[in-house]
Each structure stands twice: as structure tokens, then as C-alpha cells.
Length: 260
Image (cartoon, rainbow, N blue to C red; front, side, top):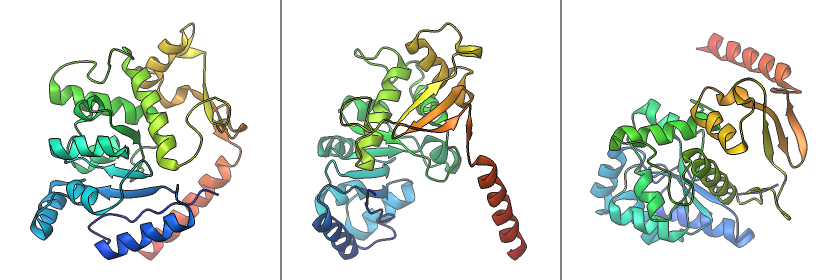
């Protein structure tokens, strides 16, 4: 079992409590991950400025041992200086595009952050979506809308946007979880998906199939099998306990609605 802490945010946890919980965690496991929501909305930035005179990310970087063990969730509203400092810290920016769009939080400047060499990953947050392809697609499309151009997040190394996004998200997600799950290699946990080679993906090369999965009509339905630690958990698009889980969810929801 991998243990970490997730103090919700600077809005919910005071400076002393934050210092104590992080110090306590790293006394037990110096490599354990720390997740914290930060600078998700402009109101939080304004409140932080009124409280201490610093912006949220600025304050955190100056007052906490932020490094590669940390994941700063959202980090939507950063100044150029904060963005550069976060990238230099080695921490992961945990982006949740569908949640941020759903809540009207704002636009994370991914192009500038990526150019600064910042680590990043994607998350579901409010579970507006649990579809990795949808999150990555929206991340790129939001950048296109903001900059009024295409292929914003491609670069010289990865000219296919889907390649850069998928590989970046895998690397950042592995780092944020503090687990060896960043690829198929010796010492890495065998976590991977198998895309359905029929239908829209028929006859496509791997890079083309990935691009279709992220940006075209393949989407989530293209995921056929999912392996976790080398064990097939999803077969032909369905978990072995899917029906039981769905029935329990419906029962729990019905009970909650009766209590409202």
C-alpha cells in the first residue's frame, strides 16, 4: 500500500497544520507524495493576497518543501514567476480539464508551463469525467481556443499532440502517485491498456491509433482491456464486478435521495 497525504487546500488547512502533516508524513516515508489543491479560482488568489500579500503558489513555494514529491492540483491561476518557479521545483501540476471547465475556473496556460519544462498529469477531481482521452482532448482544445491556433501542445520531439499529451500525462501521473508505473520497463508495474483494433482503429499504426483514441471518434470506447500490475481487470470493456458495483451505486444513491 502506497501512503500519501492530501491536505485539501490553503483555504482548508492552516500553515501550522500543513507543516506538521507534511513533516509527520515524511518522517515515516521521505518519498511519500503530497497533493494539494491550489489557485483553482481567482477568488482564492484574491483571498490569499489579502491574507498575506502573496499569491497562493508563491506562498506555498516559499513556505513549504515543495519538490518532486508534491502534486499541485489545478494551479490554474499563476503569474509568470509562479509558473517558472513551479516548473523548477519538480512538482507536478495536476490538471483536471473537465472539472475546471465545468466549474468555470479558468484556463491553465499549459503551453507556457510545458515550455518551462514543468511536470504535469491529469486527474478526475469532481468526477465530471473519468475518461483520460477526454481530459487530454479538452486540455489541447482549450489551449487552441485561447491562442486561436492549432496543435498548441505539440513540440519538436513529439509532433503528434496525442503522443506528447499521453506520454506527459503518464510520466506526471506516475510521479504524482509515487509509484513505479510510468512505462513498460524493468522495475515498473505492468499497468497498460489495450485499444480495440477493430472499428475506427482498424489498420492504423500505433501512433495513428493513439491520435484517433484521443482526438477522433474512437474515444473511451476504444479501450478494450486494462491491466493493473499485470492482471487483466477490464476485459472487452467490462470489469468482472461491474454489475455488482452498479447495483450498489444505484442502491446507495436511492438511499441518499430518500434522506434529502
